[in-house]
Image 1 (cartoon, one colour):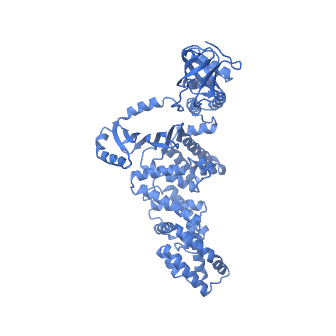
Image 2 (cartoon, one colour):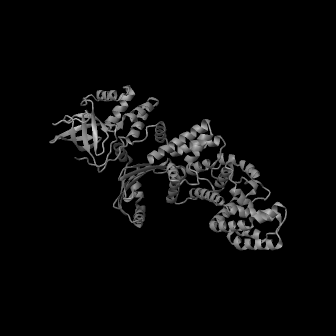
Image 3 (cartoon, one colour):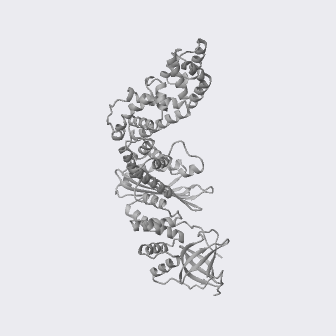
Length: 596
């Protein structure tokens, strides 16, 4: 075999169509066959490929290689001699070459990533071993750090803590712990509302209305107060400070009793407010949002300064001005308002108190923020009603899924980068603010939930050139499940990089109230759907026969065909899952074939 020298070092040169290794990475390989012209078949990182030899290597020999940079070829430098049969000795020699301490835990960690055929570089290894040294649970840390290197994640303490948090709990537990900490500190903010919407028990309409008002007042949001006051639902003599003070008495109700059906059902609302009428008022105004905004803004532009000036001096409009003002109000606003509020305009008199009230009404209804706040309140109440009124499970699941994606902050960094950050703050954004503004147990708990959300982000999507994997946890309480639902998806990519609905697989991990642990595995090939249900109930197949036609019809309406429905015990899925997950996540090299 002819031996070449490149810059004085033994090298192995491999052609490539798509580079999968980075300069500096180290990986173990084995020579499988030798061919003429100094070519060889080698096993590298789980892949068999053809290489051009420029070093004298032995068939069946195992070696450690380090990736060298090259524009057109991947160059692998041979590290040391052929590996001996004693794996521990080979790893020790490698660590000595890399200048890494050969302690018991260090050696075990390096041996693990070498055995898993995971490429790594010296910097990754040193950073990982530093985190490993400070970890109390070496076994768990080894597993997490191995996953981080395999997935090419940054080897930092923050990423490590994020994956650790994600692996050691579920989203409902983390959010519930945060809620408990907030309530023990008597804090009812928008964060409280968001967490209860996702992980709390369903609330009655009354309780949801109270919760929203308490949270708004903590944030000094006056929009709802101004709407109710200008529309005559509370006295004109009530100011915002008094409003806040009265609602503060309701905080204990929210934190202790709101989630209990029927609790304090007869409790009096502040200012004898009719919450049902208030909700109907908001829904009516929101239904005519654009028209009300346009008309009230136009009236404020034309009359605002004039009426405000007269009020400030204790004067009134001239009879001619008042007639024109009232006529315009009647024509432009009355058709858009509920009858009770329209009647106020029809009976409007030219007096400072009444002029001030109508001006406040126009000022409030001309602001986009008013409708944004009303819409949030209505949406919050409707959401709770969906779960308390026995809504369709499909709608409940889709709504809960939507809120997880919308409110947790899984796309927070992407929204910042693309300047598409929504007005509604995500839980992640609010936690980041809390870390800056609080200390003690509250700050510690906020940090733990933030790490968990970061872990969810890291695990949410894994992509290769042609393949995508996604996973998500969905809080269980509102769905009536015993534990959080988990959703996993695998799919080819379409030409524009999206999920291919013709070729994908979706797995639901459920813990149902009656059927207990249940796994639904749905596999789609050329829009043909095969479903396997794993459950230990012996009568499940028989009991679900009646809904089989419904499933068939539903899929056909979406242009899918049902090919089969199988029922298997959970033990079979557990065996398959154990086989599939016995190794940490490996990057996908599908379709890559290295040849000279």
